[in-house]
Amino acid sequence: MGEELSLFSHCFEPSGTQGRLDARMGQMRLTITAAIHARWGHRVDGLIHTHAWQVEATVEGPDDADIVMPADDLESMLTEAVAPWMGHYLTHEDVGTWKGFQPLLVEKEATVEEIARILWRLLEPAIPGLTEVALVESTEFDRCRTVRLSR
Image (cartoon, rainbow, N blue to C red; front, side, top):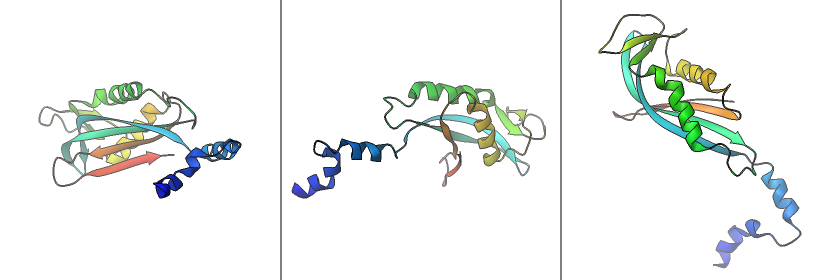
């Protein structure tokens, strides 16, 4: 028990040392990451396909914040950002309907990296403290890939 307490002794500093603790806390960051699941398609290298995506956003706030941002609000903003993509595939070239998915034109080839940039542009003006967006291609098969865009 004595060893365990010594591991965490910095959390229980004696009276008069609070300033040192506050100085350490001031160097920390407090973040929240929210994620939603969504499905849409994209066309890359001429191949149209869909993923069950995990869409994430991370917001940073002061280290003493009670709440950086309400998680429900962040999740709602993520849902709203990708809602127009449902039932579509993102593409820079209209090649018509594919398995019921309609094309949704974007400026550049819809790589996961480009989709992360689009997502950033959609979210950043509305979310103060946004530090990262991430797209996780589903683990439906034998692999999972994550692309993160952060500042």
